[in-house]
Length: 415
Image (tube, rainbow, N blue to C red; front, side, top):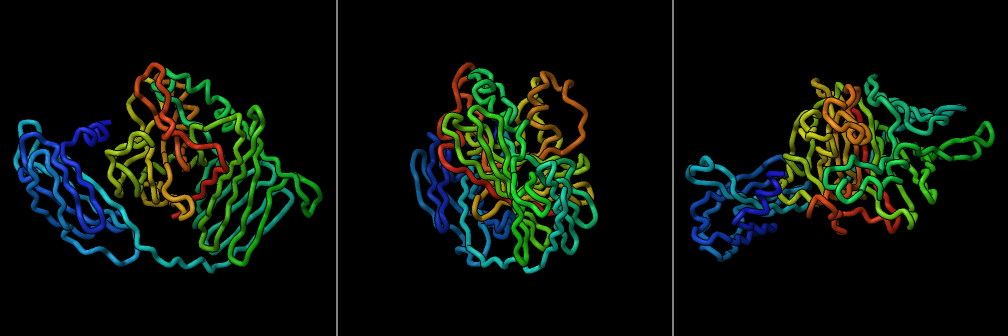
């Protein structure tokens, strides 16, 4: 919360572009010369350039300065950050304290090389297996999903990943009856079933679609969701020869159902995977309507750190605009989740509990014993609202638009 309030109250605005920065001084009495102006450039989240910029913008005036760096030409994503810091200690903050910042992000495209390693597909009555050099993936015909992902001999998942359309309500949501208005999406998340009847080597059975190419295998499940009216979604997994799996969730809207709280996939990993590193907005939690004060960068914490100390457990700990996230044990083994070029940056969450476990507890001591690390990768999540807490709904621009086909893809891989 503090990072959002701080950004909205900052008295200097830095409008950054590739080659210059427009500095708007909203202070009434002091020039920007009383601050140190720092300019940094990061490539794919890692700082590669740093310099100071002398500024002297008078109160209530603005000025444009050229940046002290040339535009980068090497492929990658670049983040230019211009920030202002106290030159001298004040009674309210030490010297070096950041009082304002602005960021600009640009990309120099690179040519991607597709994976050329081959996969082996093995089909039986009840399962579909995909094997590669150092990994094994098992899909269940009967249970309707991915039941095993072994990388370097170690099992990486604890339960079938499922499409997820729900997030635990926050305090603002209860004031506008969000849990009741969106209840069908909670039901859809908890009780969806796969409905793929197709011809199989053993006859007409319940089975996913299997598509094979020389270097990949794609398995697609279609799920029936018990909404009113009924709806459906599909989740496909394309397995490549290096062990990377690209998952794609698709939903064709049913107009009567409207928008949804979240659109993504929920994983349960071993609770030993309790370290998180992400390249996205941070360092604090961010949401669609709570992210202006966050900076794009690489951050690290523990899964338990993402649990906010609310009196009543509720949604917390989400990360917006995530390029990649690693969820690992203390030795660095675990899973890497990455955005795809098609869907762009994603919403990411790693908590000790599912949204339903958070919602069911009215006090922290009522939360169950930790058994998993619950990972959610999503196209997005509705904003947390808060114009007031007794009826104001999430503003329309922070809702997930469900009036046309929705599609979200991301990849995961053992590390």
